[in-house]
Image 1 (cartoon, rainbow, N blue to C red):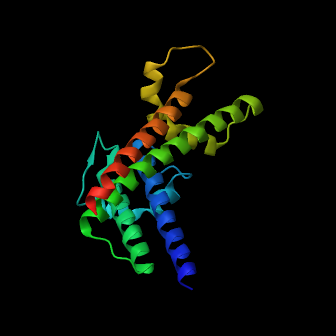
Image 2 (image 1 turned 90 degrees about the vertical axis):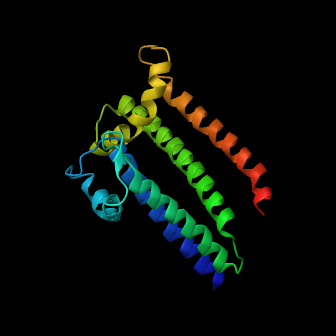
Length: 189
């Protein structure tokens, strides 16, 4: 029973985290909430607007601090809830540290998945010569992530190396942050 409850709790928090991440990326990509394909995501994450009354947006309205704080709260609830369901306690400082590091690692992982999605979608467009609206959404979501890498990679015509470089950069950053975090965790108790 407890294992089923733990899996259900994990499923709910992971789904909530994914929804808020999608909302963050939609706003970061500058996608309009009135777009009929994007509007359901904005409506499902209306709580970000509520948090937006407390936490402002920065970067010309593209970076939602409310979504970041909400993702951190969901992660803290996830860790504390799993600790409670397994009858283990967790102190506030390790909870905050673990929650922050896992949020950063999850964010990097989701960015990697988004880059992989943009690679696959670009191949679909090239091979099928079709353009579905969902393909445009995925490409628009990945563009703010890939834009800095496009500036530093050489222009090779039809071959775009920036998704591969972005993927490896996010992967290496994830390994680096995970290694640093694992070396600091024993000090927190």
